[in-house]
Amino acid sequence: MTRNIKKTVLHAALILLSMLCLFPFLMMIINATRTGNEIMTGFTLIPGDAVADNWETVSGYFNLFRGLGNSLLVAVTSTALTAYFSALAAYGLAVYKFKGKNIIFTGIIIFMMIPTQLGLLGFYDLVNALGLVDSYIPLIIPAIASPATIFFLRQFLKATLSPALLEAARIDGAGEFYIFHRIVLPIMSPGIATMSIGAFIGSWNNYLLPMVLLTTPSKFTLPVMVASMNASQDIVSNQGAIYLAVAISVIPILIAFAFLSRYIIGGITAGGVKE
Image (cartoon, one colour):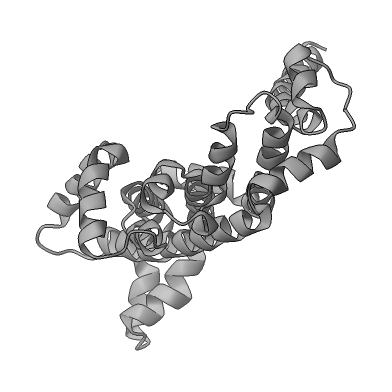
């Protein structure tokens, strides 16, 4: 009896917590259907009828689908680079023994603690010197170096990869890259999927770097486009349109999360516990 009561209370608490987490999304969707003046008057759970007007306002400021395409290009490409090269680096640090290995790993941990914004001015000077301002290249290529992803995947491999499996493959004549691509990558897939979600969301929501490096409006990513509307003089009347643009912008994140979410718990658990 006591166990059933505890279970009921736990489920009720989880349901309440889930509702609190989903409430901001609900408000975003509702406000996307209301006018700016209606949003400023107060809170309501009743949807409005201004979706068409809000969409017309958004279209008047920028091409939303162009922004979605630009953000997808940057986010998908940088996520793929982060996943592959971080997995490769993590495999090298977890499996091979070489001089300077501990120094490199210590450096990775140190770089994890340094905010990206601290190097923004130096990075801009470098990009400007290379003639890559107003290009997607400096938004994508630096994703190859992801200290947090390398650290997590290294810990994941330490917990899940058996050295005997690698030795058996080498005895059978398999090369190192063959072992990595055919044996190690499938084992790492839960950890890679877990970190890929974070990398995709981080790249998709990245505002500061695209704002500094991109100068052509047609190349702006979606966060920069939405921010340009938010900075306009008609910010009050544009509130509904801003909510609509933000609501559309989270759709790719929800899709990515829906496809990869089953790996999150298993990946984090395996990477955080040493067997």
